[in-house]
Length: 311
Ligand SMILES: [Zn+2]
Image 1: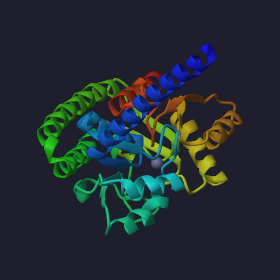
Image 2: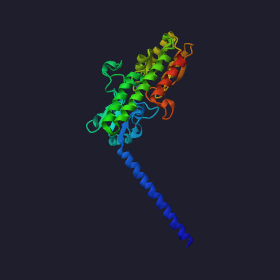
Image 3: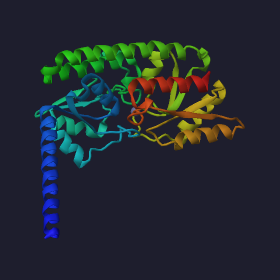
């Protein structure tokens, strides 16, 4: 008798818990469905969206920390996420080279937005390797990234008019923070003597940075990581480093280090020491929740690292 009562009360408790869980799932689902469903490619774009829209939207990001967007191929889950989205944000300018077809195909049925679409063409840097393309790494010029932030904000306001005022206010605050960060980081870079302000890294991600911060840049690979650096490129870069007495070169978090190490070995074969500086963030932010996991934190960190190694 006692056993039967125990079984019955256990069953009642389990039923009660299941009911609560089911209701919770339903509520969560409703919340999710009421929110604008947004998908973006890189975590740099995700950071801008989060600063503007916070929890008012449901955001899915396709590429996390350390992912190279030039080589990223969409997986099955990405296609499902994109199919369910109301708005899709991507960098454009051929950054997500292997996803271009997917976005093109989606264009007629979905709102797909290249966040770089409103940057005046005159402000873009043309690719040295492919005349028909522009350099996609525009986030390294905070003034250009401000255009992208504004574009994201306008699209969100249009598709989620309920929160229009909040999005407007949040983007103004965020743009001001970006402008302040630019002023502070520019002053820091200016403390490096002009002849030492040469940034050497694995791929051409820093052309906009160089223009915005008055530096010189050199790299092993072209603008996309799809092309491999050859022995000649390594030799050429090593010669430049030796003749200009460059103290350090930089690794990038989303690019394998082998080519930069080859340059270091080449310089060493001439009896000279070349330091490999800390990794710079180029095409992806750091882990979410860390300082480098935000756009402002990433640029601040990069500048501090460059100043420390070159000054
Ligand atoms: Zn890149």
